[in-house]
Image (tube, rainbow, N blue to C red):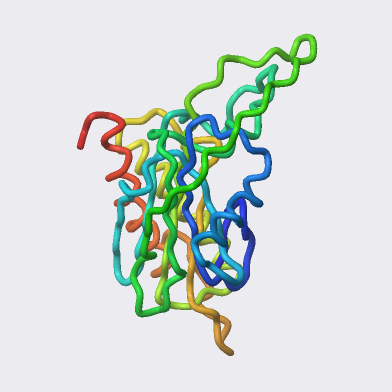
Length: 243
């Protein structure tokens, strides 16, 4: 797997994927530890990848193409462009961690599928609502802005074939390109949210090292792009009233 997940990100074997729904305005500064606690409560063991969102995890969308499955939860409350002007007050980690179309407190979990499985199985579960700590006084000239509603687009891509490490990284880039294309096709003036995450799950490569390419014009990269585009577009259309 190759993942930008806050827990278990990077490249390597992963036994499960957790997409945890947390309340809007999530205040904890240790999301990796919190995700590990949720995973343990769900009975997940071994290395895994943990994502967070305040979007409704039960409202995930899927796209399929040629054996590739993309599963997406879409929260677009704080969408914008990646290359944005520098702000005077940095956003807090809390506003960069979760995303909230919904302020309920649930989680969705999924085992990393075998090659025969087409998509993670999501299971809802309750998680405790963390207490909000009192804010510390801001330094002069660094007074925080009124925080926007957070938002996160979490993408999980599952392939039936192994990829080389380079192709795994390329697959993450391809999925991100397809996400941006879908957001624009949905009529949204943005490239995503500040906290979007991608997981690409594939079987471990054998002696041949796996498929070497996953760019958008390679066979498997093209399938990734179409699957992600379909899933993100389906999730983004309601934000424009196009569902």
